[in-house]
Amino acid sequence: MTSLWEASAVRPQGYAKALEGDRSADVLVIGGGIAGVLCAYLLAEAGCRCVLVEGGQVGAGVTANTTAKVTAQHGLVYDRLIKKRGADAARLYFEANQAAVAGLRQLADAAPCDFEEKTAYVYATGSTAGIERELAAYEQLGIPHHVLPSAPVPVANRGALGMERQAQFNPLKLLFGLMPSVDVYEHAFVRDVSGNTARTDRGSVTAGHIVFASHYPLVNVPGLYFMKEHQERSYALALEGAPLVDGMFIGDAGGFSFRTYGDFLLVGGGGHRTGQGPKPTEGYAKIRAFADEAYPGARERYAWATQDCMSLDHVPYIGVHRRSRPNQYVATGFSKWGMTGALVAARAIADLVVHGRSPVEALFSPQRSMLAPSLLSNAGVSAANLVKPGRRCSHLGCCLAHNDVEDSWDCPCHGSRFAADGSVLEGPAKRPIAPERR
Image (tube, rainbow, N blue to C red; front, side, top):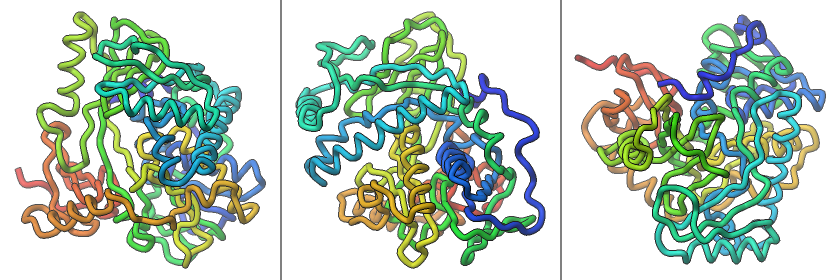
């Protein structure tokens, strides 16, 4: 299916090249989504000879299928951060993400992308206890906010906590506007990284620094990323003729999300772990059933699904990929908040490459403790699906599950997805599987 962003953004011609033969650069960025493009853009601005390689087309993956909320309000993150890592870490997380909101606002001047300032809200779908704890965290950290007694969305709720001066935009318009400033090679799928050299089917790039910005890290067994994160799918509809909302809204317990784009109302939700659904009450079916009841007469114009890498503690992994490779970096695990996370990552990695340090490197370090309840959940899912009979994933051999809604074969362990012909739809898998027998 086609997302609203793909339908409304014009892909520039003549800037992306084919990688033929061997090249060298100061920095190689692997991955042409918003994180990779922003990273390459900032490194080029800093004077680095930077090459970006993308296995498909720039922006055609997760970035094309986001709901594109530009916000430092990431659900109920601040109460959790204060408890787990302290007020200083929570404040730094807010400041880094709020600076990313401001940074994207500035980039939108150079690359017009329908950037609109909005208030972001998280609304209480049941008990107000979570919202009340988050409000206390906002007050402790000095985050500008206000409270609504009831969120103006057609979902039963008990109030909403608003974070002011956030935004929404069209992510592909931003990426396409920045492409002329980046040395981009498309259809250059990296098969292997050995030392300082990344190899594709038709050429290679050798660089002093390598950045993995490929959503799920291309190299993930060294570094233990296959244990550090899992993937989830979520869904969105663009409705025409539905009442619009003033602001961006999301439920505190995985409820529906809402935002506008022009005359469209975007409704998101229905999520589930990749390889474990969608059930009949999940995915597009869940949103469509809600929309039919809440917005009778509205027309569905676009529908799309995306995939999110979820870290163990819902804080991204940004920085040195692993200690044994200090010149390799990673940006992953944005846990559904990749718009600000992408610029946070790009700035942090540019600082590490150019200056050897970043003010946020400890906060987002991929080497931080893995002790979290979700580690046991990830391990349990992997163990069960490694011994379960069925079609095997080409990544680490887990049993694949058929996704009847999207007609794909999905891996519940690490989130790889394959089309019926066996081709790779989503990593970390790099090799296809045998075609499905019909």
